Length: 506
Image (tube, rainbow, N blue to C red):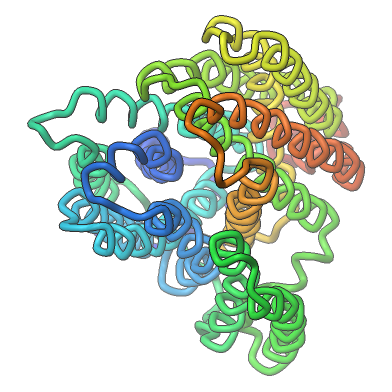
């Protein structure tokens, strides 16, 4: 079924259109959930993958990092492709490719094929994910986006922690003797259903003026990201070679060349890959900085948390995965109320409260882990996990809303691509820093009987780093607007009649 592009301005939908767009929202959020789960689901199954395939530590590292690198490298391009060729079209191509890559991962004959398939999976996610926020931005009027982003925050929270739990269940059940493979194969029915339903219910939208794909910009973005992330990811394994430092030093130079080229490209034909004018929007520029550092904190925490429980404490995959349930519930609850109830009243203070709450949860976790040592039980982790989850929920949904609230509609795809890129870049850098803040404190010649204590100490050390990052995030949030535009306008129009207030918000 073919749909015409959305007009530049939102119109009041008919009942039939209203039903269609809520169906479309469910489809794109399911796809976003599928991606979020795949980011974390592999960690919990690493011991099973290594035992079954004979993968080396290097291969295991690339099974996790390959996805993040391909994802981060292609996100801006994916957002721009949606602006040019249609967000629905690129979303459907992305979900089809993601489903195919999931099948290749599930049927991988060896670690090399699994690494390659994970890279393909990340590249397809880079086509799919940017369209989610831009479809929402183009489909829903301003006064409804708060509710929608609240739902999106719930999906983020569920995806972040249900990945390990789902991976644990599928690995422990050993369905049909497939061991770890169902963690990828479960995407097949979901992806096929999303492809069929998306074709029917998602309405096409694209940028109102013709744009061109900036191939030089694509090359510079990928080169700058890889120059930074690749040596960070492999540095410890290769004993930090000189070429790694040379590449990392080249990364800011490449980013500088990218900015200069994009400025020239914008003057020449108005079709740059990155709309640098977006950074003149204070809420967007500040939000991008927060997203980058927040992604770094999450990248460090989730990986070291998994290693601490499974290797340090010797817990089974299922026990470790189930421990995250209170965290997931807390994130979902806080995300649901933050945008709809708290942000309209308190604005950016909600995000700052989230950062402070996460710090409090981390400090409590450090204290309990130190007190109980290797005898700590899952129920004793519940208080810090709930506090951390509430803090994260207060950040994830309002932050997206704040970053996109003042972005022009025609640049929605480019903006959402940048949001996801910097968060994934932060995540990839965080994963790479695990080599320093976690493994860097563990002696490579450690005796097997001392592994538990070493991992516990390394976990506490890594959490202190996460605390420092979140403190920096708290300070960065002062640069965010006091309230996102739609909430500020709603407050200003508080005395207007309902019909007039609706026109202001739209």
